[in-house]
Image (cartoon, rainbow, N blue to C red; front, side, top):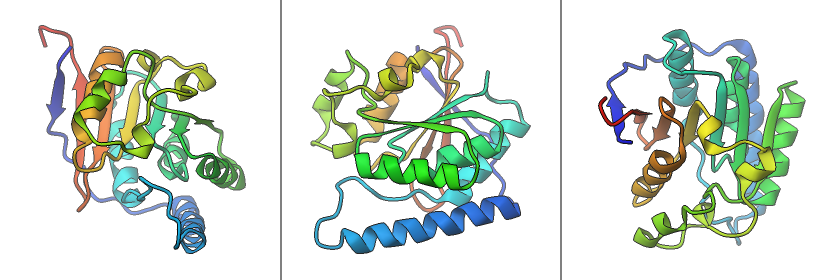
Length: 207
């Protein structure tokens, strides 16, 4: 089923106090992490613009763009966007291949009293390995090993909103996996730097 690009306007939003507190803690965790890994950085880790992610998710919520409440962040890192989704009432999940980042994400969610489930594993479902042939070896898009969807007990087609931050050259992989495995009507939210957030919907063939 094809993906439809949505021309939804995402206005900048004032951040509630609870969101500002979460982002302050996340910034500190990320800064500490980066200092620890100066000599041996974890491949594929780069944080999103969390303020824009909040604006996008709040717009989706207020305009009822999502068919349901199930949210999953692909390549969730510190889990900040998944935490923001939980603050907005989504049933939030995250999949991250690096175990250290998963533990940090769980700590952040717990510290702010948020119910978010994080899984350590690949976001590429079984049968999706062929989508990786078109790109170089990116750590967060590795196939094989433990599937994060399986750990969550959540099939990709049960997710209503997926958030991802694809690096240059990865977008076709992320959109390809989403188009193949997401359920009809699901939303894909992607961040591309410089405040660029894009929304796609998986539509039926006649849409």
